[in-house]
Each structure stands twice: as C-alpha cells, then as structure tokens.
Length: 267
Ligand SMILES: C[SH](C)CC(=O)O
Image (cartoon, rainbow, N blue to C red; front, side, top):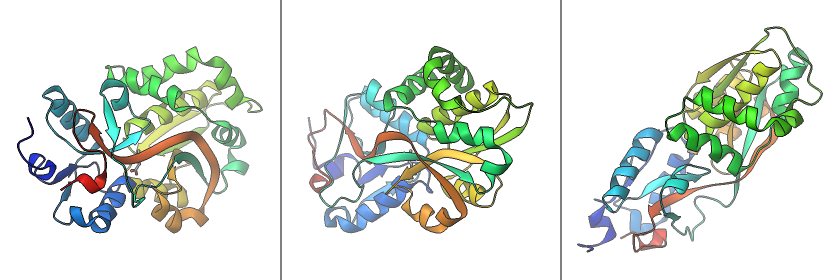
C-alpha cells in the first residue's frame, strides 16, 4: 500500500550506473529540465549494482526508479515500463554504432570488413545477454551464439580473408549489452584467425582509445543522443561504420506495479 508520494517512497533517488555513461548525462539534464525533479538525486553506481538493486526491489515489490536501456535482459526477467519523457530528454529511438580507428581499413582490411558488416537485432543481442545473466561466461555465451547463427555470421565475414594471428583490440564498456556484442564480434574475428584483446573502459576513455588509436574498434556508440557529447569531441578522429543494431532506447524505467507513468509524475 503506497505510504506517501513516489519521491518519499524512493527517497527522491534514481538508481543510476557508471558516471561516464550517456544515460547519466541525460539524467543530469532531466533533473534540471523537470522542475519536479529539482530536489531529486541520481545515484552513481554501476550497471551490475543497478541491476541487483532492481532485482531486490522487484522481488520485494518495492518502488524503484532506474536509468534503463533496451536491449537489456531486465525486460525479459521483470515486468517493467519506461516513464514517458514529455520533454524528450532521453531522445527517441537510438542505434548502436560501430566506430574504428582511422587507418584500420588499410592496415587490417579483413577485420575492417567484419566490423563494417556486423549487424544484428535486439533479439539476437538479448539471447546472448540472457545466457550471461543466467550464469554463462560471456566468452562461452558468445561462442554458442556464433555456432548457432552461422548464416548471420557468414554475412559478416563475407569477403574477409583468413589471417594468421594478427592482433585486434576491441574497446567496450561493461554494459550488459556491450559485453554481449563485443564478445560475439571477438569470436567472429577469432574465427578468421585474429587474436582479439578486449579492453574494458568507461565511456569517455573508450571513445578516446579509438580516436587515439589505442584500440582498433568498438561496437558501443549509442547515437544520435546518448553519446552525442562523445561524438562531438571525438567524431572527427574516428571512422564511423554506422549502425550494428537498430531499435535501442534509453530512459527512466520502473516496475509495472508502480502507479506512475511519466517523469512529470515524480513528485
Ligand atoms: C547505458 S547505455 C548502454 C549507454 C550509455 O548510457 O552511455
């Protein structure tokens, strides 16, 4: 039974993730744009910590508001809803794009071909994410998906020739979505002979690593809105290979049992 306002119930807190994430920047903007959020706080946390807080609240049918995104396994496990965002702070549909360092096409044309052709659906990504959430090692979950989806993988490797142990470094942030996609791409690059190193960074350093050539590629650019600031800073120093997934979204997410439908209702 609701004891008071939504704000009182969640102590005026939105449970966030890592500070550098674009969704955290968008939520900082939301706290300024929505007068009713003037006294609210977004709690810096991590993707994993946010997910476990969400799971705990959900199991106890407690109120909670989190920074959420699609694709994500939480929508398969819990009955959740996005809060309406009348001021459009979180943008509309997002795509996840692939960025590579300048020069990769000449130096590693076969890796470039795979990264350029990598494209899959939110359902594909969710299959790998749920396996990992259910306890599978990300490398194992990626291997299993690659084996089960050889036709799609063949489209990605079409035109790429085998190499002999050349090294490729993929940068990523430990968001569940990018743990899945980066491990799948790594498996596919390994299948044509590359030795792949995964470099886990925060969002800003991930863009910087591609721009400065410290990593060869990443499949983790959420655009046009989420990572707009990073593209503003680094866009002219990277090569943008376009979307690898369409139908993504970010926003504030609550369990469906909460009687709130819009960010404007958070009082
Ligand atoms: C958390 S979303 C996967 C990306 C972002 O917010 O930077």
